[in-house]
Length: 277
Image 1 (cartoon, rainbow, N blue to C red):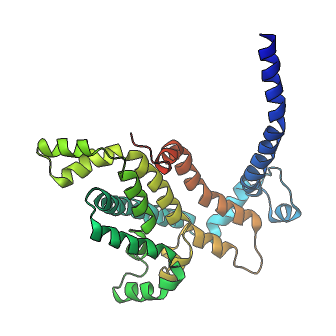
Image 2 (image 1 turned 30 degrees about the vertical axis):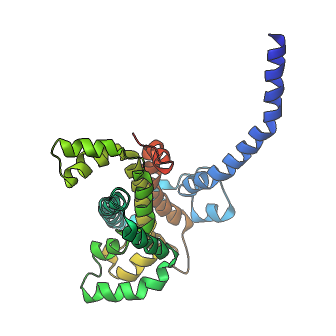
């Protein structure tokens, strides 16, 4: 018994450098988040001086933010665009991944290979043609101009296809025997089983839509259609930047994505690793 305790103690001592390293890395990772919260409560002079403790200017910074920008309008637009894009993208990409894997053949595999090549094309290379398409359809400054280029992404289709390999074929065959058609199998069988994959895809899609800046800046010329990243860019674009107000805007922009990730972090990990429940 004594030897076992000595062995355990020696193992713990060897792990001390690893624990110290992990603590330091964790502190470095969390510090920017802490600084964001503290800077939002300080004046621009205190932020410029490097003050890292909490101040008393939170209410004043919030009041100035409301005076300078349409905060709630930008929040509403960001929520609308991100939620609509997430719902539509999950439906379309899951249908595509489901079809590519469970009904695949040689020709569909070739189509999927070409689809993966689209991941190599940078967004800026397609921005001008997409802008002309949206302009010709009269969709500028609308939610559809925001979401249409992103409702079907090769990455999400690949993710759903890979995780669809864990979908039990026996369930599909039993459902067909019970009289369900293919659409009913998808909505009643596939979607509940793949809920972890949907959660992971929802986190990725929502965060990408919420943080999008370049494409909305191109198609959203009306200030009433601006999103939170555009609002922050406007705060930082002046000759004299109020850093307290800027960090208050960054705080409001960051909270929704943090909430979504923390709420769905368990399902996100399961979906990324391909788990099926």
